[in-house]
Length: 181
Image (cartoon, rainbow, N blue to C red; front, side, top):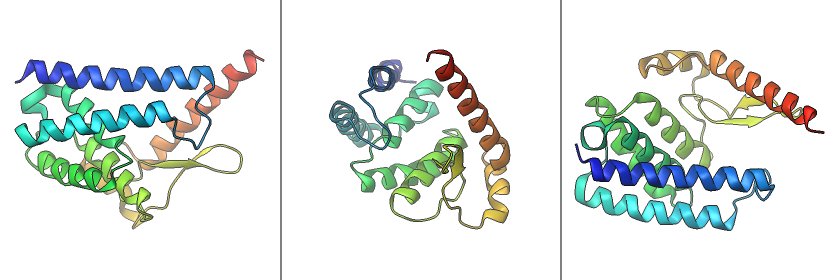
């Protein structure tokens, strides 16, 4: 395992999440917008991940461990300015999953993000929008009758369980917001 590379990837992920939280807390991140600071960080991280991949291939579990692999996935997930790169990463994740070198949920989230951003139905039901009342609802799903079987193959809970988790998170968020008014 390459601990230095793992540490670097985790630092990149933490900075991504720190900036996201900072922008959210400050009110600078309105729904549906892409803050220029966030975009710049995502582009910087994408550039570095490309460099890492040129030297090492996909940074999976065997190269960077669980936390490093999760960080690499998050960086790929947030490279929305480069959909071709995201698709390339999804292909590499598919290969890594087949070799047990990454966790299946990472493939599901990235593949669904690529599909929804390109206007296609998602395959695993990981990408959600909100309905008219602001409750989470999945974007369209290809072959929805078999989505739970696909999710199970990757070790994920059912779509219904995931949606209920997200609804519960939204209930808590709304309750906390009401308390601070």
